Amino acid sequence: MSKRAGFGQFFALKAAALTVLVGVSAQVNANDQEQYVPADALFYYGTGRSIPAEHMFAIVPDFNLTPKMAGSEENAEAFEQYMSLIKNMSEHMAKWGIDDQIQMSMYTVGLQPVMRLSLKDHAKFEASLIALEKENDITAVASKRGDVSIRFYPANEISALAGQYNEDNEETAAEDSAVEQPEAAEQLDSKKGLLVANDGRDIIISLIFTDIADESLIDSLVGINKPSKSIVDSGKLKDLRKKWAYGDEFAGFIDIEQIAATLTDSESATAKELAALLSEPQAQAMLGMMRSEPCRSEVSALAGSWPMIVTGLRKFDVSEKEVVTDSHLA
Image 1 (cartoon, rainbow, N blue to C red):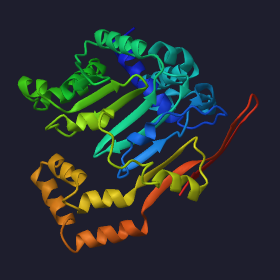
Image 2: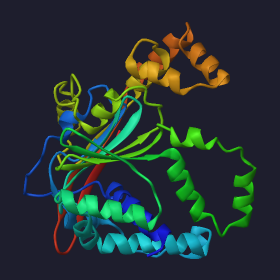
Image 3: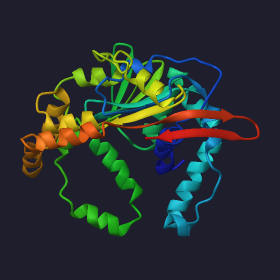
């Protein structure tokens, strides 16, 4: 297996799951993923219970992407591999130890995006992940916090892998070489990157783009520290499903008011995180302007008139003959 195919397979498994984050089942076997979602999450998308994988992937359309449609033969080939992966998803999920009764949640902790995916076999997942690292010459920083196994891939490791994808593209390589690269010591000390963890029940994936000053953020991302108030405690998710008639198969939102508060406030933890992230003087100046009057009041008022974007499933029935859906967006 090529390096590109190997590491791509891992992310394709996740991408495929994101593509078909819908379904229904008479079997209810939910874990407590929603307890890890902060009430002030900027967005949330998830299933409220476990769903058979065969139902989730039944909705994926079966079509081919021609080079003309894709823009290149390489893109068409990549799409064909992706569709092949979906069609044989059960086999790949079994290899990775992913539960065939899927539950998934996507949300934010502060500014960091997090995804939880139900896990069946902890040992299989760890073995497959380590094998994939070896195939792709990727170095992970491994650690154990409580019952959670954590593997962290610094940004420079991910960048190196991305560079391998372009090794046959001379023009791209020339452009990359012209960009000033950080010193090796800075790369090795990087606290930005990809975190992949598992607590024996869920795979936890987070893209970290805020330098971690302490380990409390890691504990929050992997669920060692649960939020003081979750999306369940606040009643936010229950109210969303009730108001818009969404089932527990799939529901989600983007919280416009919370995003506006992060931009205009300066006191909340997420607002401070944003200020620390925007280190460039021009970005800092723009953020300062948004946090001053009258801009702050105007942004807050606009958000108040459009507080959320919501989406969910009101119906999803799978049978041997057809798939019937009633999706909603408001």
